Image 1: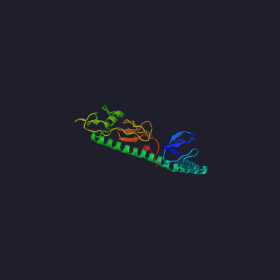
Image 2: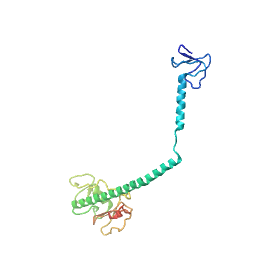
Image 3: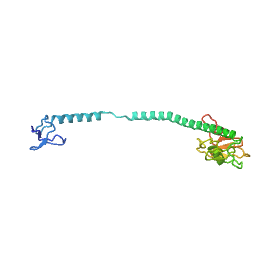
Image 4: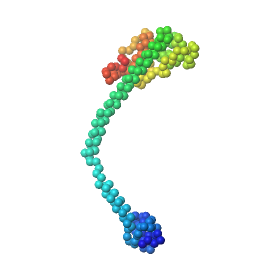
Length: 221
């Protein structure tokens, strides 16, 4: 029975509790009536709901081996379709970037040539072609004679034509192989630099082996 808000013989809060004669435990609800040796109605209802929930979980059917195999096969088919498309898109992106880099460099070399008495960039003070002279004349301020300077002034009022020499997107190099005036541009790429440049003829090429997705060699871009 319930006496002064206390439940006789049973502790409501512990699922492992048993009736104990002569002991009083706090009763969580005055409306709940307990008696010696009998489980509370609310506790019984809670236990029934919990048991039903466990049975429902056990009845949930998992995937069979055949279903799992079908899922794996479908994922494999999707991968075989999607991955090549991403790969092709990446290759096309590199090729388009190479064409754009070549276009910009050739245009800027032509602009420098016009603004410096028809002399192409790449010649040092002694008139000898060199990589550093080309880089300085393209990325720094220059005077009409091609002398470069870090700071613009009334004398050094031309350029810069590039912020930096772009990287060859195929081989990842930005270095330049300079061909002397008496030299010949190689028939095949050497792949040891990003670009090949001959100032005397204003030839600027990508120094990379391989062909694009249309079968055209990078060296012929």
